[in-house]
Amino acid sequence: MWEREKITQPAPASPLFWRLNADVYQLLGAKCPDCNHITYPRRKICPSCGSFKVEDYQLSKSGTVHTFCINWTPPPGLEPPIVNVIVDLDGGGRYQGLLTEVANPEEVQIGTRVQMVLRKVMKDRGLDIYGYKFRLEKEG
Ligand SMILES: [Zn+2]
Image (cartoon, rainbow, N blue to C red; front, side, top):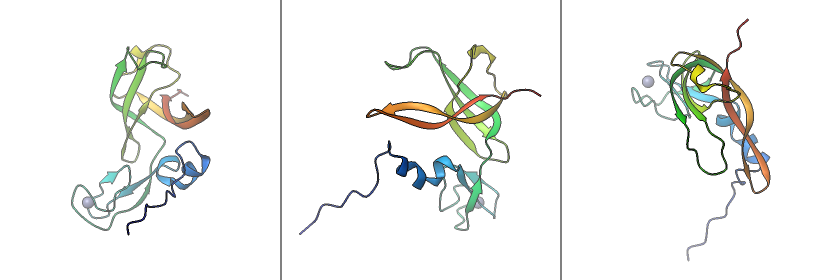
Protein backbone atom coordinates (compact mmCIF):
# COMPACT_ATOMS: atom_id res chain seq x y z
CA MET A 1 0.00 0.00 0.00
CA TRP A 2 1.14 3.49 -0.85
CA GLU A 3 2.32 5.53 2.14
CA ARG A 4 2.17 9.25 2.22
CA GLU A 5 5.67 10.71 1.87
CA LYS A 6 6.98 12.39 5.00
CA ILE A 7 7.45 16.11 4.73
CA THR A 8 11.09 16.70 5.60
CA GLN A 9 11.54 20.17 4.20
CA PRO A 10 11.22 22.91 6.82
CA ALA A 11 8.80 25.75 6.19
CA PRO A 12 10.24 28.61 4.13
CA ALA A 13 9.84 30.91 7.12
CA SER A 14 12.17 28.81 9.28
CA PRO A 15 15.84 29.73 9.70
CA LEU A 16 16.75 26.07 9.07
CA PHE A 17 15.28 26.29 5.57
CA TRP A 18 17.56 29.17 4.70
CA ARG A 19 20.65 27.65 6.32
CA LEU A 20 20.19 24.52 4.23
CA ASN A 21 19.52 26.47 1.07
CA ALA A 22 23.04 27.43 -0.02
CA ASP A 23 21.92 28.56 -3.44
CA VAL A 24 19.91 31.39 -1.93
CA TYR A 25 22.00 32.88 0.87
CA GLN A 26 25.49 31.88 -0.28
CA LEU A 27 24.69 32.88 -3.84
CA LEU A 28 25.97 29.67 -5.36
CA GLY A 29 25.48 29.39 -9.06
CA ALA A 30 26.99 26.95 -11.52
CA LYS A 31 29.71 27.43 -14.13
CA CYS A 32 30.35 25.20 -17.10
CA PRO A 33 34.09 24.54 -17.63
CA ASP A 34 33.43 23.60 -21.27
CA CYS A 35 31.75 26.83 -22.44
CA ASN A 36 32.06 29.14 -19.35
CA HIS A 37 28.28 29.63 -19.19
CA ILE A 38 27.11 30.68 -15.71
CA THR A 39 23.64 29.84 -14.41
CA TYR A 40 21.63 30.75 -11.35
CA PRO A 41 20.00 28.90 -9.75
CA ARG A 42 22.44 25.99 -10.05
CA ARG A 43 21.82 23.28 -12.59
CA LYS A 44 23.40 19.88 -13.05
CA ILE A 45 23.49 20.22 -16.83
CA CYS A 46 24.77 23.27 -18.70
CA PRO A 47 21.79 24.86 -20.51
CA SER A 48 24.13 26.30 -23.13
CA CYS A 49 26.14 23.25 -24.30
CA GLY A 50 24.61 20.27 -22.46
CA SER A 51 27.78 19.44 -20.50
CA PHE A 52 27.45 17.45 -17.27
CA LYS A 53 30.67 18.89 -15.84
CA VAL A 54 29.15 22.03 -14.27
CA GLU A 55 30.81 23.23 -11.07
CA ASP A 56 29.68 25.41 -8.17
CA TYR A 57 30.35 29.06 -8.83
CA GLN A 58 30.33 31.90 -6.28
CA LEU A 59 28.28 34.77 -7.64
CA SER A 60 29.22 38.39 -7.02
CA LYS A 61 27.06 40.70 -4.92
CA SER A 62 27.47 43.61 -7.31
CA GLY A 63 26.65 44.27 -10.91
CA THR A 64 24.80 46.42 -13.41
CA VAL A 65 21.10 46.69 -14.19
CA HIS A 66 20.35 44.61 -17.30
CA THR A 67 16.71 45.71 -17.34
CA PHE A 68 14.07 46.90 -14.90
CA CYS A 69 10.35 47.47 -14.38
CA ILE A 70 8.66 49.99 -12.11
CA ASN A 71 5.36 48.78 -10.65
CA TRP A 72 3.11 51.65 -9.57
CA THR A 73 0.18 49.37 -8.68
CA PRO A 74 1.60 46.55 -6.52
CA PRO A 75 -0.53 43.97 -4.70
CA PRO A 76 -2.24 45.01 -1.44
CA GLY A 77 0.16 45.47 1.45
CA LEU A 78 3.03 46.78 -0.65
CA GLU A 79 3.83 50.44 -1.10
CA PRO A 80 4.43 51.72 -4.64
CA PRO A 81 6.68 52.11 -6.45
CA ILE A 82 8.18 48.61 -6.54
CA VAL A 83 11.28 48.53 -8.73
CA ASN A 84 12.04 45.06 -10.09
CA VAL A 85 15.51 44.66 -11.60
CA ILE A 86 17.41 41.98 -13.49
CA VAL A 87 21.11 42.42 -12.78
CA ASP A 88 24.14 41.23 -14.73
CA LEU A 89 26.42 40.26 -11.86
CA ASP A 90 30.13 41.08 -12.00
CA GLY A 91 31.97 37.93 -13.05
CA GLY A 92 28.86 36.45 -14.71
CA GLY A 93 25.35 35.31 -13.96
CA ARG A 94 22.04 37.13 -13.71
CA TYR A 95 19.87 37.73 -10.66
CA GLN A 96 16.34 39.06 -10.49
CA GLY A 97 15.29 41.03 -7.45
CA LEU A 98 13.81 44.19 -6.01
CA LEU A 99 15.51 47.52 -5.60
CA THR A 100 15.52 49.06 -2.13
CA GLU A 101 16.38 52.46 -0.64
CA VAL A 102 15.52 54.35 -3.82
CA ALA A 103 13.99 57.77 -3.21
CA ASN A 104 13.40 58.39 -6.89
CA PRO A 105 12.92 55.33 -9.14
CA GLU A 106 13.74 57.51 -12.15
CA GLU A 107 17.39 57.22 -11.01
CA VAL A 108 17.43 53.61 -12.18
CA GLN A 109 18.56 53.07 -15.75
CA ILE A 110 19.91 50.17 -17.76
CA GLY A 111 23.58 49.98 -16.81
CA THR A 112 23.15 51.50 -13.32
CA ARG A 113 25.61 49.99 -10.81
CA VAL A 114 23.94 48.15 -7.91
CA GLN A 115 24.98 46.17 -4.82
CA MET A 116 23.17 43.27 -3.20
CA VAL A 117 22.09 43.77 0.41
CA LEU A 118 20.21 41.58 2.89
CA ARG A 119 16.80 43.07 3.67
CA LYS A 120 13.39 42.04 4.97
CA VAL A 121 11.34 40.94 1.97
CA MET A 122 8.07 39.82 3.56
CA LYS A 123 6.31 38.56 6.65
CA ASP A 124 5.11 34.95 6.81
CA ARG A 125 3.05 33.57 9.71
CA GLY A 126 4.36 36.32 12.00
CA LEU A 127 8.02 35.88 11.04
CA ASP A 128 10.12 38.36 9.11
CA ILE A 129 11.56 36.77 5.98
CA TYR A 130 14.89 38.12 4.77
CA GLY A 131 16.37 37.92 1.32
CA TYR A 132 18.55 39.82 -1.09
CA LYS A 133 17.58 43.12 -2.62
CA PHE A 134 19.66 45.60 -4.59
CA ARG A 135 20.51 49.19 -3.82
CA LEU A 136 22.26 51.77 -5.91
CA GLU A 137 26.03 51.50 -5.61
CA LYS A 138 27.50 54.31 -3.57
CA GLU A 139 30.22 56.24 -5.31
CA GLY A 140 33.62 56.71 -3.74
ZN1 LIG B 1 28.44 24.64 -21.21
